[in-house]
Image (cartoon, rainbow, N blue to C red; front, side, top):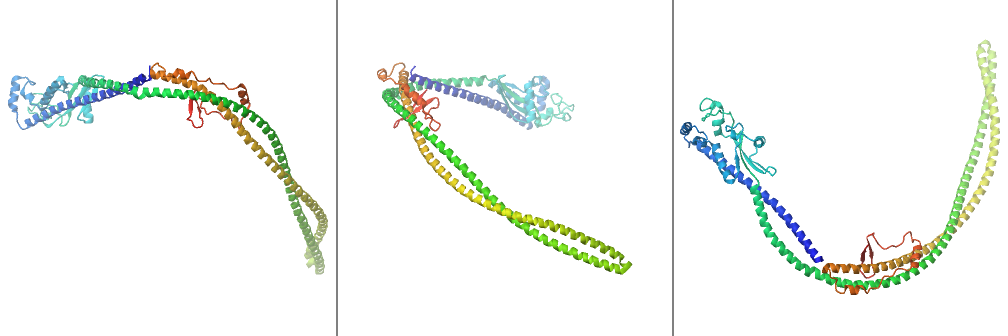
Amino acid sequence: MSISNKIIIAVFGALFAAVAALLIVQKNVIELQGLQLTRDTMRSTIIEAENVRQSVSELSRRGAFDRPKLLQEYRTSGDLRGSALYKTIPVVAAWNAAAKAAEEQGFEFRVPKHQPRNPKNAPTPDETSILQEFERTGQTDYFRADRATDTITFARPVKLSADCLACHGDPATSPTKDGKDIVGFAMENWKEGEIHGAFILKTNFQRVDQTVRNSMLRSIAWTLPVMAGIAVIFYFLNRRIIVNPLRKSITAIQSASDQTTQAAWQISTSSQRQAEGASQQAAALEESSASLEEISSMAKRNTGGAQQARELARQTRTNADAGAADMEEMRKAMRDIKASSDGISKIIKTIDEIAFQTNILALNAAVEAARAGEAGLGFAVVAEEVRNLAQRSANSARETSAKIQEAIAKSDRGVVISEKVAESLGAIVTGARQVDNLVGEIAEASAEQNQGIAQVNKAVVEVDKVTQANAASAEESAAAAEELSGQSKVLRDSIAELAMLVSGGEPAPGQRAQGENAPPAQAAPKGHAARGSQLPPSNGQHLQPKSNGISTTLRFPGEHPIVTRR
């Protein structure tokens, strides 16, 4: 089947689906309109009956009816529902009018009531629910369309008016004084405004379905000729606007495809030669880069060792400076200890002198106490104790002085030794500073050497990247050329299929003649593939053709991208 016929079938199918959807929508709309019209008709019928009820009630209030005469006629005939008196009752006149109108419209009319005087007016379960709905909600209209039971129901409540109470009101107001109305029925004591019945009209969906059916037949009668005309017009437009231009485009694409195949074959050959040379150059540059990398590694190790030695020398110098500072503090401490010992020795001498003077005073006090006799006996005991304390203080002072003299001698020796240690540490600090300076110069020289080697290595790496990129580009070019050559054949086959699709089985003119003259695509040399696979990655990646797994995009300078599906 040609593409033209497929397009026509697709468009006609879409048009048919749209028309079918519109017809379904129209059917639903018409059905809703039919239900609305049926509801309005039923409502107008009942409202007309309510108007009759009001008119008869007004005539009765004005005395238009001779009640005694009508009552006498009823009693003579004995037929209540056939008498004129019965027909003058407003609600009776209303349902008679409604029943007549319902018969003309083909509706079923019912007047169900609570506690009906006529057993025929006893409500069914559905009618009971309608009456309860009116009593519960107080609404004035009730409408229900039920497809399950095939019924359409409309109802309006019958509310008791003042004239209704003449027959259904308080039994105490009975005209016959026996609790009954004028026709002999017991009065129910109902109140004005209460709902004790309803006017109900019922019908089925037949008239609505008939209306929908007629409307749908008219719509289909108009739609089919229009669709046929659209299909004929679209067929000729499709042939002129789509099919003929497609045939011309297929011829032009076929010519361009043959030229692309020739160019792809030439590009493939040159790209393979370029890829071989780039692979050899990349291999040689890789060996040079490896050697330079080893030299750079050795220079880095030397620089690292120099940096470690420099750090150790710096730490040694820092420790020596700290030791010299601590020794200086110790010298000051030793001098302070010596000064403190000298001060303590002076204090001990003062204490010894005080103990000596105290002993003399105690002797004098003992002498005076002896002169005093018994009166100075107690004072002599105190003087003796003071003398003993003075002697003990003198002894302690002498012992302390001896120990302090010994400490002073040791302090003097410590000061001398600390002076010698300070001089030795000073010499060590001077040597450490000289070593630190020398190691710093060595580290700086090693760092400069390493920096120079790193710059050379960086340059070689950049050259290696460029070489690798060139090799990868050459491989990509060769692969792209081979892919392009293979896809050219696929393109020719696709064009042939498209021509058969457009023409409905006939190939485009010149398709076979041009398609058979294209040169075959050549495979890449085996050596090139092997060398290309041995190239190491440059910067961790190889350049690859841009592909998402579904299509590969190839672009040549000055040309549009060619997308080939896999």
